[in-house]
Length: 219
Image 1 (spheres, one colour):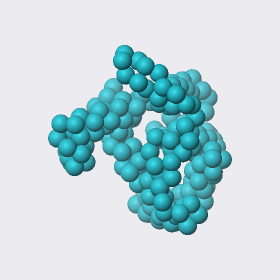
Image 2 (image 1 turned 30 degrees about the vertical axis):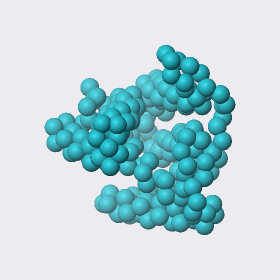
Image 3 (image 1 turned 135 degrees about the vertical axis):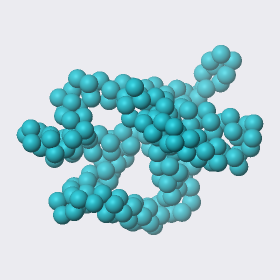
Image 4 (image 1 turned 120 degrees about the vertical axis):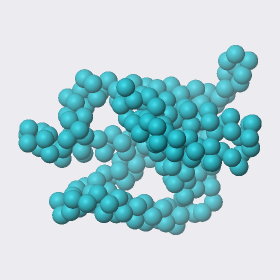
């Protein structure tokens, strides 16, 4: 449900991070608070939905043959929606009023406050957008893999790895990083073995951190 996704994105921001930011300047405390909240939400999800993995229903049935390869219509829809979201975010950050203000707040929040920018409203817009995109992603991925109350951890780790590899210099960089992660997972499972997938990704992340901390595709 998109409403629930937005709500769970807004609660940590308005109920935890913002009040904590007024009291302390240490980011470690905020991180630990978010981790604790994630654990609480995880356990509540286990109580509500059970511990057995659940598989969602595909939004589109049938397959299409592209280059001799059968591709599910749902997969094509997921690809199209993903590209549309990234294109929309890129255009919004470049041309949208709140998008430009968000970039200013992200670069230097103190300077943005000094210039009179509505920092709280900008952060709220970013949080709502994040929850909306996360909800859409959940709807698209649920039919492709069985999800349990602990699935968020693997998605968070893979998302972080994609962000590290791609970088944050452009809105498209994390998407390219995600595609690279998928290619590495498939290649390592095929030629080395499924057991080696995590080790290959970890080694690549360490290498990128050591040689190019801003990511591979940051300009």
